Image (cartoon, rainbow, N blue to C red; front, side, top):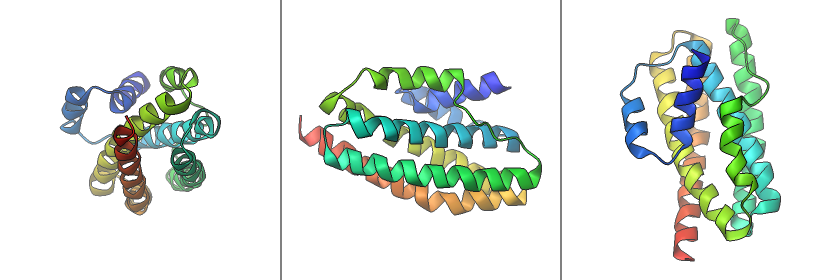
Length: 173
């Protein structure tokens, strides 16, 4: 099951829109799968944000990334609290599949990093919002449903910011 979840996460953050549309019609995740997804998302966003501090050329990207580091770190703590109330385990390290997703970013610098980062933030937050909405509506546990509902406005703010970055990056081409 963890491999399946990891594959779904990889697809969600990849640039394959047709596959992400297929996952949109998939059943809701189990509570543990949702916790795994949310934790991996938080850790990925924080790691990419830290990478952006040195690799990005745009101050707008650096500022956005810094916000994501702070807010996804806070979210990870809130997720941990909700998961512990339900007796679920929270991953504390990025899994192999997500490490592979980080690797291309480590090779990018400047405007190439900025452009790819903006694209990935739009896709990743779009997928996260979809998964959080499903959990808020269909989750089996009230603590996780409440957590997901509370996290949605922050994720939507991140998506809006990512779309602004993407527009700014595409207009500078």
